[in-house]
Image 1 (cartoon, rainbow, N blue to C red):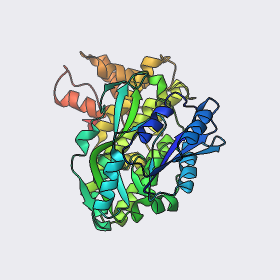
Image 2: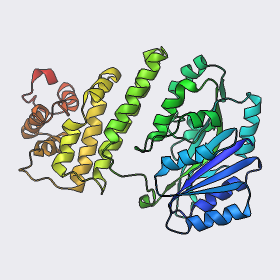
Image 3: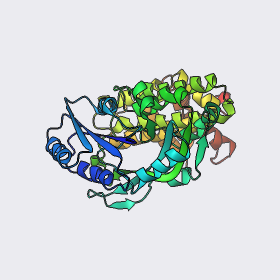
Length: 400
């Protein structure tokens, strides 16, 4: 048997039959489908059992609720195919992609991994596509590339990061590789960390430019259950990914010029995500705590190093100020709040025609003890140097 396809599912009676059908409709039939029911309380369990009764290629595992990565692991342990592919229960495989991957496996003599593209489509509640390939993944990966040894795998890995091929689990892995390294089950980015964990054991690999996997992003945002939530571990998780990749690439003796900018960009994108999620309904912080995290708490040594290495001070300030603006839009701040300086700083920076009072508020905000990285100074420097306002204002020379 060539393929073991694993589908974790939890309370998804509406969409998971469609995901299953996208697999059963494949022209290539030498596969098993392992459905891992993670303690569903709707009709998902019943539907899965009925599917298994009607097709001998389908096997169902019922378990107590353990979260998605435990479902991955339990399916991996039961897999018998030469290769394993994971398909989430509200996504789909594109037509004839198993036949395509089977041809590529033979053509390239059974590579350890085939990296495959995930196309995210904006859709309505019926999965009718409104915008195909919303994040333009097809434009990121356009050439087939085979890596015949470890050195070639190492050299191409920074591209795997920038193209997002290693930022999910939707790739084709040799069964022995997957069964030697299971997923952690404690953070939502465990799929990213998984690809770091196996990197040293990937000796041959193929980058496949053909679209393989359809991921659906729903027009009604509340239907995207894993998006827009606050996770208290998120900052440490993004730091961990950044650090682990730096250590890995240093061990591989890659030229830092090849990967530093890529890692810094990813970390900055992650920072925006964690700041944006402060607005989530499930975030337990007060507004004061959220602003303090944005101006102080998130600016640890990892972020400072990333900003310095990537020359991204202005980008850092922009990301923080944009996130803080969203917080102020969602919730007003009182003048007696110790973080009120941030409101005055942002309001004055955004005012089109600035007077001396605005300049003073900006200076106070830049110099405030709870603004240790002097967020806003890059933009104030531009205001002064470009003479876009009348008067110079009094500001510490180190900021201009």
